[in-house]
Amino acid sequence: MTTASSKAPTTSVKEILGQTASGLTIDIVESHIVDCPTTRRHKLSNTEIAQQSYVIVKVVLRNGSIGYGEASTLGGPRWAEESVESIKSVIDIYLAPAVISTDASAFERNALRMAAAATRNYSAKAAIESALYDAVGKSFDLPASALLGGAVRQSIEVIWALASGDPEQEIEEANSKLEQRLHRQFKIKLGFKSPEDDIRRLRRIVDALQGRASIIVDINQAWSEATALRFIPVLDEMGVRLIEQPLPANHVAAMARVAARSPIPIMVDEGAFTTADIARAGINAEGSVYSLKLVKSGGLMEMKRAAGVASSFGMELYGGCLIESGIGAAAHLAVFSTLPHLERGTEQFGPQILVQDLVCKGAEYRDFQVWCPSGPGLGITVDEEVLRQVSRSG
Image 1 (cartoon, one colour):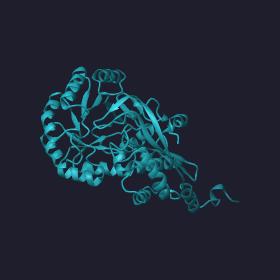
Image 2: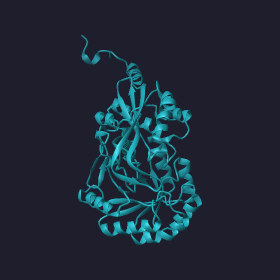
Image 3: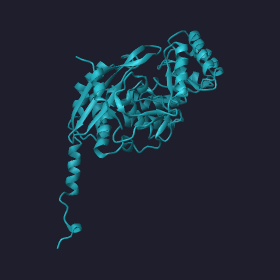
Image 4: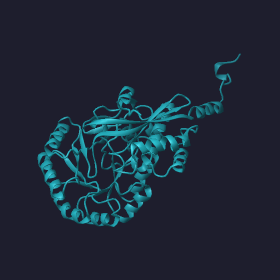
């Protein structure tokens, strides 16, 4: 008589592993441009937007698992060299063919394949890698964070950007965020007017929020070394706690001199994309805080490496954003949730500034925190109807 426990398995471990590997084969990589209106105008020193455009990547694995990723830009090829039009072309012509028919879970190998197919193009690569983490996580019923080492936090203090240029509107907006317990840290964009005008606007906001919020400023490379040294003492007197990229990215020595003389910590953003850039910034002491972004690192794994390099030089970490939708925000948060240290919180507020987000389930905002999505993959449910509505035709 044969007992149930003594029956030979109908499928061997080798066969199961083979079936799993086959099921993870990438069969389809699609890209679509979408244009999403924002709730108000958003100004930087070199551009202004009333809608945010993305390239949405959809991957389909042989096992039927579907993953989504997102490439974000800001006002076209102004913040960096990529535009949604160039991103879609690079994905369709170069990057998708490099990974189709490969194992989606071979993240490092696929990153190398994409690196061989196209130089830089970091936002395009990050979109594909995000979609792969989403699809593979769903295949194994695991969150993407588990594939990145495991989460050490479920929520992160979240910062809101004030960037309309109208101080009265910005004060009203900040008061609303405070009352709703959504945000108590505000990053104010400077650099699109004269320094004197910027300071007057900033002082109006600081006075209105006195004692109820902390203030960061982002100058988006708009000042010279002399201007920075002139106005940083004024910022210090107003209680500003962090200054982001005051000088142009290529003014490396000047950034170091400003950082050495500033009583306020300086954050490096556009000044360092790659891990080699970060190492240079650390060696030169160009800033004591580093802003992490997928658009700079080119993928989830590489952004985690960027965090490690910055930390090794004693730089504190800030979770940056480029006004991502709920798709891009989830990819960032998957990484941020696994970092041993994220001293400066995150600015992943993008889904809140869109008239309609691209997900109907994703990150949640409450109690001054962004709560990382839970569930397999990126933990999001894409709103297919909204996606169709905002897709660019032609």
